[in-house]
Length: 202
Image (spheres, rainbow, N blue to C red):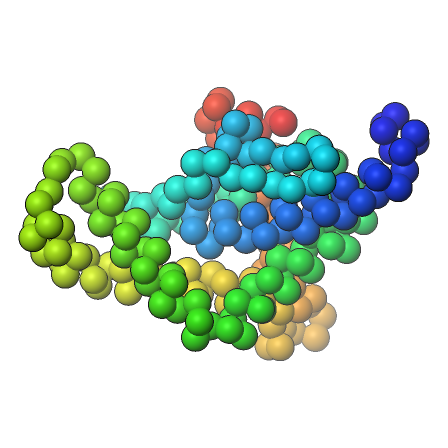
């Protein structure tokens, strides 16, 4: 770790910023089921710790509902080592919970945004294999309205479960669900089952 020894303060600031950025990105990966975060789709800037997500796409089941992968977001051994134990437990996990809580608190503003995003995305997903006229696209939107509503409900439920819970048992942390997701994301057995292009060892 020569970088941390030679420039401790910049490395500290990088880790701090990276933990917050990764938390927001990981929450979105889980909520929208953006599962295939291979290295080329997981970009971080060394200058400021910012995390970018090119090719950010929702994963659907064959029925058009948001999928539920076993690995919720990319938290491979090297990513976790870069965070460090202190920042993983002290910033990354709490940040996911706090961001989720902020979204829930302003749920009225986000509801229409989620519906618009999911409507446009699923219509594009259904019609990508064939050209459609405007009238056929409108008919498709009407047919898919129930699935859009169901998908929005799934997204809202995932955000809510990541927020700190007041109903947590006395011996459980209020961010238990986020900690469970982190365990699933870094579980060796689950990572070993990922495809080669995922580069689960990185």
